[in-house]
Amino acid sequence: MNQRSVAKRPDAVMVVGGAGFLGSHIVDRLLSENSRVDVVDDLSSGSLSNLAAARSSSTEGALRIHTLDVTIPEFVDVVRLRRPEVMYVTSLLAPTLRDSVGCTKSYAMAVAVFEAAVQAKVGKVIVTLPAAVLYGDVPTRELPIKEDRERRPVGLPGVTANAIIELCESYRRDHGIEFTVLALPTVYGPRQQMNNNVVSAFMAARASLNEPTIFGDGKQTRDFLFVDDAADAASRACAKGGGLVLHIGTGQQTSIKDLWQVIGQGLTATTAVKPAHSLQRFALSASRARLHLGWSSWTTLTDGLDRMSPEKN
Image (tube, rainbow, N blue to C red; front, side, top):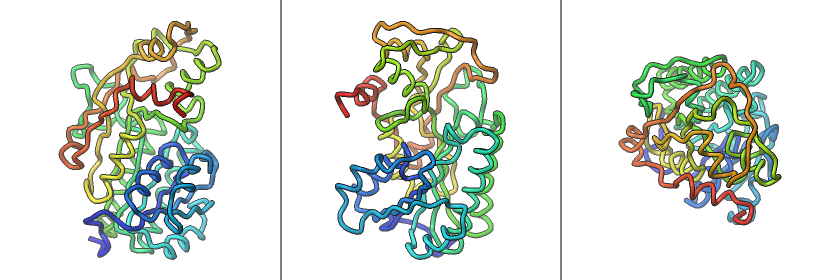
C-alpha cells in the first residue's frame, strides 16, 4: 500500500466539494477535531456562505479555501503543495449532476482526484455516493439493503456510481491509494438548497405555505439520514473502513406521505403521476458500518426536522 496510507486520524485533510451541503458539514466536523482542512470547490453548486461558521471559528491557518475546478491541471499543484493525508470527494452525482453532462463531470472529477492523489502521495480518498441509484427497487423482505446485495445500477447515474466504485478499486490495486466509499440514502439538514431533495422541498413549501407535489400515492419510502450523522461517519472513515463500500443509513423506512404529514402539519399537497423508475421502497442497513466504523445513526427524523426549523437556524 501507499507509504502514506492513513492508520490514524490525519492532521491534514482536503475536502473536494467542501462548500456544498454535505461537504461543509464534514469540514465543520474535521475542524472540530483539530485537522487542518483545505476546501476545493468551484462554487458551481456550493456556496461560501455554507462555510461561514467554519471561517469564523477556525484558528489561523486551519482552513484554506481554493475556488478551483478539480479537472484543470492547477488542481494537482494545489494538492502537491498542501499535501493532505486524506482527500474527501463529496460532490459526485449530487442532485444537480445526474444528467448526462453531470454524470460525465462526476466521473472526470473522480479520475482527477485519484490522479492527484497518486502524484501527491495521498494516503486515502473517501468518496460519497447516492446509494439508491446502485440498487434500484429491492423486494420488501430484503430491506434494509446490505452491501453484499448485487448492484443493479439505475440509469446513467447508477452506471456512473458503479464505475466510480470500480475506479476506487482500480487505484487501490494499481497505485496503493486506500479508499472508502460511503453509500448514502436521503441526507437532509441545515444548509440544503430548496428542492435539493424531498425534505428540503417540503420544508420550503411549508415556509411559503405552498402545496408541494407528492408523486403517486405517497406510499413510496425512503431512508432519511440527518447530515450530522453522515458527517460523523465521514470523520470515522478517515482511519477506518479501508477498501470497503459502506452503507450509511438508518435502516428505517418513512413514506413520502408520512414525511409531509410531519412537516406540513395539516397543510394539503397536490399529487402527480409518479415518474418512471422511481423507487417504491428503500432503506440501508448500517450493520457493516457498525462493524468497521463503530458508527450508527442517532438522530431521529423528528429531531432532525426540528433542527431544520427556521427558528433553529
